[in-house]
Figure 1 (cartoon, rainbow, N blue to C red):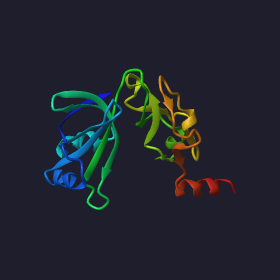
Figure 2: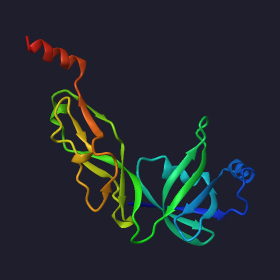
Figure 3: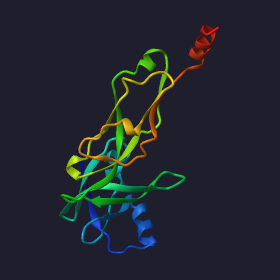
Figure 4: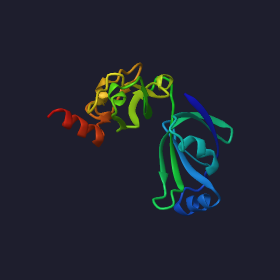
Amino acid sequence: MKSLEIVGFKRANLGKKDAKALRLDSYVPCVLYGGDEQVHFSAPAILFRELLYTPEVHVVDVNVEGTVYRAIVQDAQFHPVNEMLLHVDFLLLQPGKEVKMEIPVKFVGVSPGVLAGGKLVSKLRKLKVKALPENLPDFVEVNISDLELGKSIKVSKVEAQNYTILTNGAAPIATVTIPRALKGQMAGGDR
């Protein structure tokens, strides 16, 4: 799993007014949970670009005034209109303690349904998994080599290694749809 460093500064005041002032200075208010006590800090907004605006998952080395914590992003809040980053919650990684995280899906294999002219439609881009920090995968591999026209692959078909998938097993990950032109050919051929 990729690692990134976020350098932050402790926050003395925790009110709305102070958070607003931080955002005006291009800083993002953050909280680190999971330890003995919560750590409130702020970090430059530019540091979050390659952490949040990418499909990849990262372990974050949060450096707050010299103290380094290994963490993952638990939640990020954005402004509903201008999409500005408002707040980030981090979860401290502790050895031997499982964490829940959304991991991106990666398709492997070639679908016979796609080769026959169907279109692969991705229904879930990420799956929620629970694992020890050292077992968190970079992505969840989904084999689509048995996927026929009009069929779906469900979460329950995915084999988990050293982690537990928490996403509902009945949820479809991907479907091969039949294009209209192909439906017409199939209907015409049945007469």
